[in-house]
Image (tube, rainbow, N blue to C red):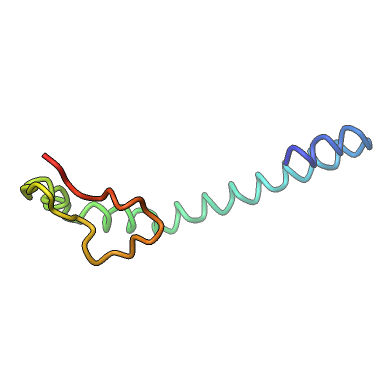
Length: 87
């Protein structure tokens, strides 16, 4: 966008770029209004509100043992090998 802006200033076609951006805004605004009017966004919000997230942080209750390798079985060919819990 910045490149287009600077070229439009340099080669005097900024008015056309401005008009195109204005028309693009109008199209996007109309599509947004159509989506809101159809109610599809309300259905998505209702569906996401029903997601149960009560057990997402259950991993925090797992005790860590000294020397436990949390990444056992994971390909660690590009790591330093320091993925061991120390207490």
